[in-house]
Image (cartoon, rainbow, N blue to C red; front, side, top):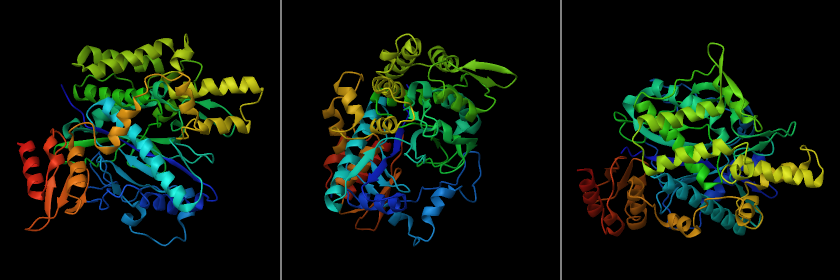
Amino acid sequence: MIRMLSGIETEYGLAIDGRGAEDQIEDAAALVRGFPDKRCFVGWDYFQESPRTDLRGFKKKKLSIDPVDAKFDSGRRPLASEEVRSDRILVNGARFYNDHGHPEYATPECWSLHELMLADKAGELVTVGVASAYEAQSGRRTRIYKNNLDGAGSSYGTHDSCLVPREVGFERLYQALTPLLATRWVLCGSGSVSPEDGRFLMSQRAGVFEDKASVDTLYRRPLFNTRDEPHADRSRWARLHVIAVDANLIGEATMRRVGLMRLAVRLAMADEAPEWELKDPCRAGQMVSSSVDQDINVDLKGRKTASAHQILESYLARAEEHLELSEEERWVIDSCRHLLEIRFSEFSEFARGVDWAAKLQILREFQEEEGIEWTHPMIASLNLAYHLIDDEEGLFPALVSLGRIEGEPDPSDVLSRIERPGELTRASARAAAVQRLSSDLLSASWGRVVLRSPSGPLSIELPPDIAYDERLFSVESTEEFADIVQECTR
C-alpha cells in the first residue's frame, strides 16, 4: 500500500481592534514573536526554500506581486526574511510563522488523513492561543478567522502538499489534477457571499485563479501551482503544492479534500486518471462555485460539456477500478459518493458534512426570518462569523453544539496533537529535536536538523519515506539522536 506524506499550510485571517491593513505585516510578525510556549525553537533553516523553481524544469526570474499589497509595502524599511517571517518550530514538529500579514500554521507531515485532520485542528487551537497571548500583552482585542477572504476582498491561502515520486512529472500531474481542482468545490468549498451583489458562492478561492499553471501564489494565481520545492532529495521527490483550496472547518471535509487529491495523484502514477480536457479550467472552477442550486455543465475542448458531478464521479470510479484502496481511501470514495447522491434530495443532511452548504443553510434561515436582502450587512457579518475561531462567538462551534455538523473529532485527540505528532513521520524527529535537544539545536527544516556536536555542526537528513523510532523522544545527546535516525534509514 502506498503511503503519501502530506501537510496543510493555513494562513489565518487576523483582526486587531484599532489596527488597519497597513499595520498587518508588523502585527502578524509581532503576534508570532509573542508565541507563549517558550519550548518552541527559533531557527528555521531556509536552505531548501526555492519558491521560483518551476516543476516544468526552469526558474522564474521574479514572482508576481499583488499591486494592492505593494502599496502597503512601499516606504517600509526592508527587513530580512527571517525577521519578517519570525519562524517558530513547535514541540509537535509544526512550523508557525508570519506570511505577509497572516499568522500561518504548517502542520506536521502526516501519512494518515485522519491524523492530518487532527493536526490541522490542532493548528486552530495553537493560533487562537497565540492570539490570546498577544491580546493580553497588547490590550487590543484580537480575533482569528480560518478563512481565505477578508471583508475587503483580499484573498489569502490554504495550501495542501503531497510528496510524489519525481518521475511522475508535471504533465501527468497536471492532466490528473486540473479537472478535480476545478470541480471539487462541490464537496470541499467553504462558501462566500459576494460583497458586490450578494451572490452566494461555494468557494472563497475559485474566483482568484487567472492562470492554468504557474509558480506564482500571490498574484495572477494559477489553478495548478508549479512550485518545485520538494523539501527532500530532489532526484527522487517532487512536492505537489496545491493552492486551489478553501480552508475547511468541518474535519471530514478536510479529509475528503486531501483524500481526493491523493487519489488523483495515485491515478496519475498508474496512468489511469480520467481524461477530461477543460476548455478553460479557471472559468470552469468559477462556474462550479457559482452553481449552488444546480449541477452545472462546464465546457470541454471540442464543443463538449460535462457536469461537475460527472467529473467527480469519474475519479471515484477510476480509483475503485484501478487502485488497491486503503480503508481511508475507501471512506473518501464512499463519503464523496454519498454526498453527491444527496446534494439536492437531502440538502440538510448534505450540509452536515460540507462547509459551504452548512453556511448557506444558516444564512438562508436568517435571511428568511429577518426578511432582509442578501446584501444586508448582517449577512456579511454572519458569513464572516462562520470562520471565527472562538467557542463563545464563532458560528461554527454553535452549529456543532446543535448537532448540525457531523464527524467532528474528540477534543482530547486534537489537544494531544499540540504536544507531539500522532505518527512517526519525519515530523516526529523534528519534534523530538525541539523537545529533547533544544540547547544543541542549531537549525531545522522539513528535510533536516542541524545539531551541535563536539566535532562541530552535525547535519542530519530526515528522509520523508521512512518510519522514525519512538526512542527519539527520550534521547539525551546529539550522538544518540543521530544514531537512532541512522538506524531508521537502513
